[in-house]
Amino acid sequence: MKKRILILLCAMALSPAVFASGSQNFFKLHIFDNDTREIKSLLNSQVRYANRTNFNKFIATYDKDYVNADGFNLETYSNLVKDVWDTYDNIVYGIKIKDISVKDDSATVEVTETSYADIPVSSTMDGVLTSESNSIYYLKKNDGDWKVASDKVLSETTSMLYGDAKNLDIKLSAPAEIQAGKEYTASLEFTPPEDVIAIASIASDKVEYPQKQPKEVYRKFPDDNILERLFISNSDNVNEYVVASIGLTKADVEDLSIKLSLTGFGYKIVRVNVIPKSEEAENVKNE
Image (cartoon, rainbow, N blue to C red; front, side, top):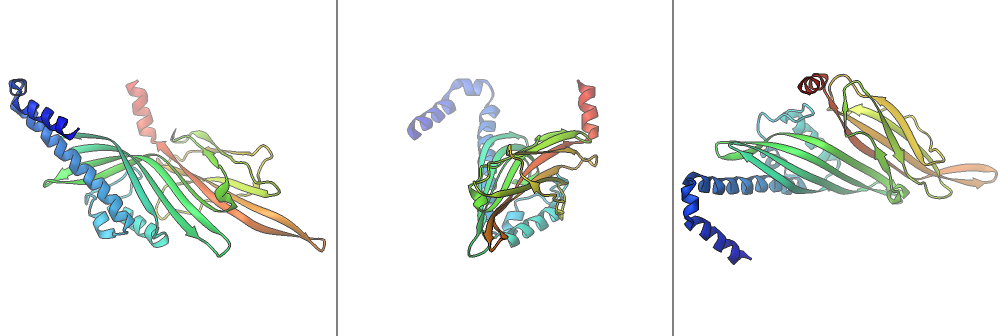
């Protein structure tokens, strides 16, 4: 296969058609290929540095004027990374680059990113963290080097499950995108193990730093195994998280007394991107 590719490249270089259409197009093709390789190398190096928790090299892949779609600048994002790595130093990160578009000194990259970590809690209970997101990276080239200038998370799901909750098939549904100040429904669905009392809550909170603990109101999980809650998206033009919390307990009867023991618990989190009112009005105007 490599020989065939080399032959095709040689044929392109020698073809009169290439030069007839202008030699600059041929050289642009090679420049684009170099840029694509450099961008792939940059994003893969981010994963490598993250897996080694090499903070300085990881942050060096970002432009000094970096600001993401959640409004975090490089300083805030750096603090967020430090907090995560101080809490979970064994996360394994992965990336799949789906598409790269380059124009002059700017580039747009679509990716799917994953993370995984074992979370020990006690000698009798441990947990697992899993996360998957679909994002767009915006890069710019300064002095010959590509840097990440911004990024936007299109969708994101994170689970932290402990004990018996690790065996559950938990579905948390919410719109990936909603207009500011609009109602939306979030629903939680799973089938608890037999002879287990399940409680759950659904809450929402803004994507901000430091992240606040959402207020949880636990209730017995419904018999139809679906819990729903209605929210109104914030009017501050800030993206949101919907957080589902669950708890699993067993009841043991001893000497006419009931003793409850926790067998599992966990959290599932999905992102809801909020469309600012200004963008909503502009979209209506353009239509």
